[in-house]
Length: 181
Ligand code: S3P
Image (cartoon, protein in one colour):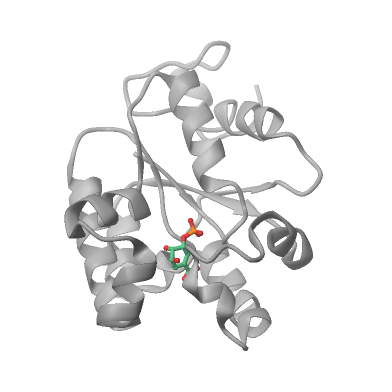
């Protein structure tokens, strides 16, 4: 399992899609699965049920995805803060932290009404609070600032393999997790 974490605007969905195509694995975005399951948008769930209900549903969706077949999973920016999600990620997933600077993140997603957390007055503090959380759950950190999504994807592909039997071109099983060959 390869799981992408990072703040809103880090490029989790974009890079997740590219990574899935490269590694020929299915891709799931936790927000999209939540919306399908709830039959409502993330924005509606926040507005009608509140953030705690969203977080509970988010955890359940991610736990189910992690229990399913091998795939690439992009998590919503707040998901890694959930203690039970953290515990589940620790059971063997390769967790890629996509790093993004605060200003760049806001340039990428600022003003998106579909992301209710962007309206928080303490957004900068939230960003600061989450950085060590992402770093703690991650097995690999990759900088995205000023880099093309394809370049970031190449970087990740050389440093992870999708499962214990897969062999990425140019990187045999002996090379697992040891960085670029
Ligand atoms: C959130 C990030 C969003 C989405 C929800 C809450 C957050 O996902 O899960 O709006 O708390 O940072 P993205 O990181 O994909 O924008």
